[in-house]
Image 1: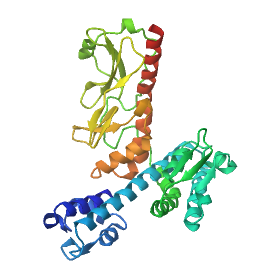
Image 2: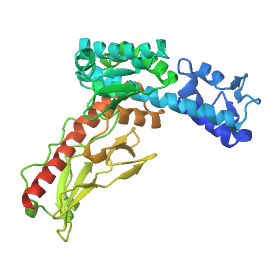
Image 3: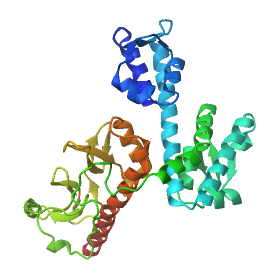
Image 4: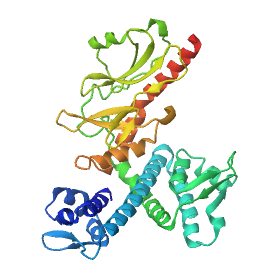
Length: 361
């Protein structure tokens, strides 16, 4: 979907240069033609097939291409969020609870589609027993409800109201119908301790421990890191700057073999400040490094707004989409699991640092 949208955006920007896409294109083949329904999607979006290429319909202008690209981006975003929620529910709950949760979410969405004029179908009371036990009562249930377009209403929450349009609801229902297939595919794959197949790490069998029980006044200076190596991916280390005016959190990057500054906390202070790093199209609090086999670190950004880590499946899906030539959705669970496990000691260390600073203050 992302590739289809990019093709349309290219056409809109320069029809003469981008209206024709050769069938021999490796990117086109990998991202669309080798995917079930890929060619049908191209045709539906206005590309006409001939023996050598796909040519954008001459009767459609740049405005039409832009509108179609926006539509595809909307669908792709919906697919990613629902898929991430489905995978998370399957990973974090027993099978019966997982199936019951997604079934209820589907019922809500299908009822709205079948009764488009009935606004009551879009509203589910927060005290609804089925909602509270079958969906909100399972790990990841709220994320799935949110992915379906439901928003909390009232403070405290009185109900959940669906604001999704017909298109999004149809996509949601279609994705939920594939939940069993998604879980079966994930279950069939053997676990792997690496971030992705073939990825290099300091010691993929070792998970770092959070730092605790330290005294801020006794922390070493940042210069001490020059002669120290980490033992696990994203291993946290606390030091102070040379003037001892701030505590710094560094994390070990095993591929580039260096410490990366993750954030700082002034002395005294009550707030930890993350150092956000630009990766791809976003800025992120944590950065992982991945090696696709050539020894060169590829950065994976992991967001933690207000210190709360983002859904690891969303982050994994984003990384897969950015590196389709190396990855596919078969890697989703593996990447998400590693993000969750290896980032946990970092967030725990930050919490311990804030606590230690508060005691000192």
